[in-house]
Image (cartoon, rainbow, N blue to C red; front, side, top):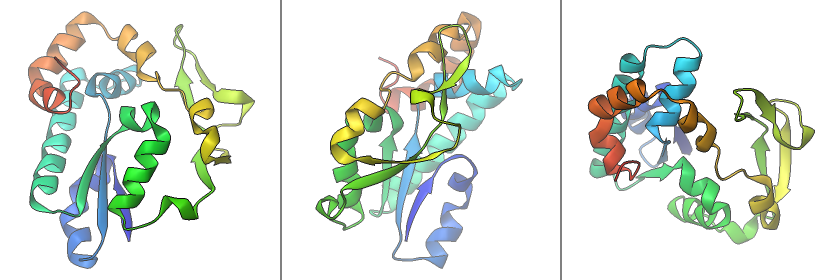
Length: 175
């Protein structure tokens, strides 16, 4: 069993570990500034989101420190080097990426400079798309955080850093 731990699943890792003692866990982290901006755009409170982000990341770090089968993957690293990260992920799971010639994605919208959302390549939202491994760099938009970070008000940025700066630094999101 391989479990991708994001959002609420972070909080049930201990239960999953007890249920599936041989499982491999992949904790996926994304820049907290972008995470908070996206939630604030939907009406969430910046401080509450920063606390939730900090607490979730802290929990993932503790799990990774205590379990050699728990690996943390930065979302941005997957976007920057999809093939390399896929090889790393398969390695964590004891699998051979050479056995795979296509991978499946779910088409998701990204935010534009003006705040609008669009799905790449004219696909419908949540469409399942199969891509060859050699197509990954052309298909994946590596700078998805850029527009969100640009739209984040300075006061919210400061509040997020004050609240979650320790984990943002630990994951390399702050200098």
